Image 1: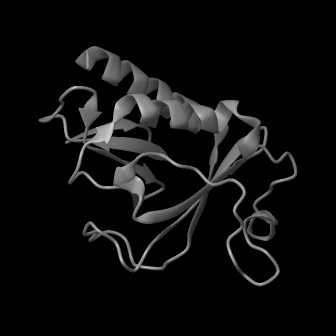
Image 2: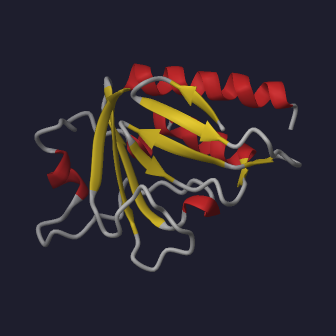
Amino acid sequence: MKKIGNGVIFFEVDDSYSFDGLLPLRINIKGHYLGTLESPTYLISFMGEMESIVQDNCYLNENARIDNIESILFNEYGELVDMYRITIEETFDDFSKRVVRNNESIFFYFKLFSNAFFEYSEVKENEDILECISKKDYVDALALLKEYTASLNI
């Protein structure tokens, strides 16, 4: 296993396997894992979606702050809104996922479904996980992942 990123966010990859654009990987955000190493992820789609977090306006909410992020992600009935949905790859489909960013920070929300296909020993079912990281930490970790995947020539 190889960890690529920093102490706030890193991508853990199974560097013993890579094939035809596929690589088992998962994300760790402040100690919380998202995804599985049990199945490979298609890197081109994954990298495109990871880059879209900082590029696409669909994730931008300039008013998002740590003290109001829950009111942005949940409606008045406590239900998760459809906005800010992120589709990474099928190896992450066991999770409900949302991402919101402002100009300095990125807010990640995810929750493991109770009927998950894969086993996740580090994650509790139906636990709301909401983490805020700096945009800089995210961009730095993503740049290291891009550098690593380019070195694999897959």
